[in-house]
Image 1: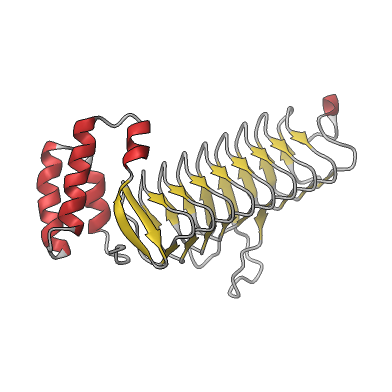
Image 2 (image 1 turned 90 degrees about the vertical axis):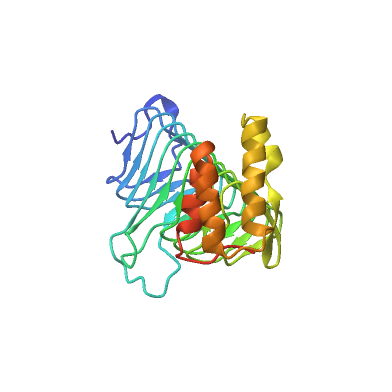
Length: 264
């Protein structure tokens, strides 16, 4: 429901387009700008000087900090003002000076953000990206267009991801990594260009993976990266392992997707 200051939650200096739709307890700080066709769910807080442009739908309990820019036009020379969007779930944190852009008609026309993600200061999510749940992008990490980041992945500060790359679930990209290839689930990478450095042992341990599961993931990693096998041969072996340890099916399915080569 569009509001103009009920309970004092919308600062009088905020600029809100009549075509925006805000839930009754959305908080909007001083000098924030919210454009037309922006929908904001319950208990979301918009900080001072933040700028939100639609079409865009934001869920509940998000926090967008001061000077963030969410839903702006994509940085794509092919973009010609088409009606595209950004969709965000619940409980995300968008920190200072972060930039999240809408999609393009050359893809599905939408940038998708899941739930419980943290985008630290100066991070950038380009057009048509797909972000899962519980993702962390540390300061100044940046995504090119059409990038997919799966659940629980962590991108260290100043990580750069080339367009169309995929970052697998529970993976870890160390500070300053430069990625132009896909990162499989559970894998830790580092470098310019990024190279595999092992599995994300600490992250898996913190998230409750059993010792047996972690050992199985380690064996699958060694099969892919240390057994001197061609990718198809390594994939066949990992498929066999997944019959005993089902969590390896995610690893195998990711490897089987040949839209882009893997970090090696």
